[in-house]
Length: 522
Ligand SMILES: Nc1ncnc2c1ncn2[C@@H]1O[C@H](COP(=O)(O)OP(=O)(O)OP(=O)(O)O)[C@@H](O)[C@H]1O
Ligand SMILES: [Mg+2]
Image 1 (tube, rainbow, N blue to C red):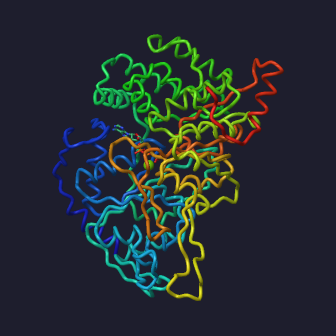
Image 2: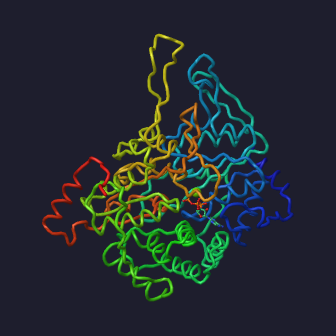
Image 3: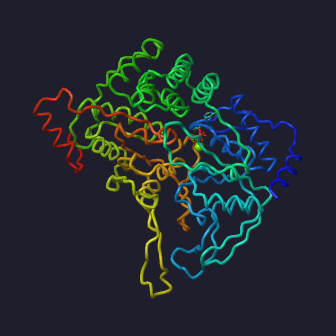
């Protein structure tokens, strides 16, 4: 059946060029020639009705391309991040009620797949290879038959017909040698449903054009500095001298953040150190600075860092390492990046992250500031929430279960920060389902976090003050996938006791093991 639809539709592909003009593009997206070609290519497959699988390393504009294309075509886009815990009901739909206080009017509430399938929207399934086999199989059958026929508990058998405008797009990061990412290998049968479009890493010319385009949009005039930063980016990405244990992985996200920061008045060298260098320690950091100094002289400046911590920073043992982390965390935060604080085990990364997360939480919400400790047993529900028994079970009007938001959902919704401690301990499939949530918000539009499990509020608006502060010990960094890592600005906390005398050491230890927060006295 699918083959026939595919062939018929292929014949209908209009050969005419799909015209895209720069003025049609909003936000910070730069319409390079290559970006135009990618958009035109995918538009071609959209016309054919064949599902598309975008495959390429992290930060190669897979998601962004689909978002831009849907805007240009004025097609409604539903984006959904698959995870190992996504169930068929999360995608297809489940029994629910529109009224949270009453379970009297139960009905079938469609999930993202059914909604897009029936109404003819574009469905973007990010991280498709995180999904369970049974979930992928269910989608496969719907694509094959043009129908969703599914038994939903409490609703009986539901049947939905595919709208001819329905378009399915999936994305996946390729398998990386040496990295055990616990992702499913998509079956040949599943893959054969899709046209695969490769998204290779950006070439230097395109990176330069994007960096220049962003600087122009932001009215930044020093194009020599912009070119230096793009060239430095390219050299650094392919640098082999950095020790393997250091967390590498840089993409256009880091380049965009650096250009963004300098256009807001940040000193260029500090911006470059923040997004490219602040994760390194010792010899690697020295090498980073040397390379800047030797090959990028106009950009280079000595790192002085004399700034004291702000007066309302929590009471702590103030030292150079902490000030350095705070300094770069501040630049990263101002440019919309989430933070990953790394360091040797026992170096105080959890405590330092707590102070930083507390400080970056708006004053009136600081009592909500929290710490979430990961373990290998952590589930997505632990972070986002779950249904819990409600009221008196014998009273049929009170309902049986109610949804209770988890700490992450509350922080996203109400706009505060929390520490996600020891992130490498969580199963990769669990934390990677957060990739969509942690994507850079680079337009003024509203961004949403999908929680299909919660039928009353399956989408929540991501508050502008939400900040994810994660910690990871240095020797566990290789457990994090490049895609997850690249959503953060990674900052290294060095030895906080270096150069301290006996009295300072005592003071430091008292602070680092203390759990109470109190405002630093002026
Ligand atoms: N042509 C462009 N102009 C400006 N910014 C761009 C362009 N293409 C991509 N970007 C930016 O690059 C970043 C990464 O893009 P995107 O999120 O689409 O990558 P991805 O391939 O989906 O990565 P992942 O596999 O990790 O999900 C985004 O912040 C996006 O806005
Ligand atoms: Mg993506």
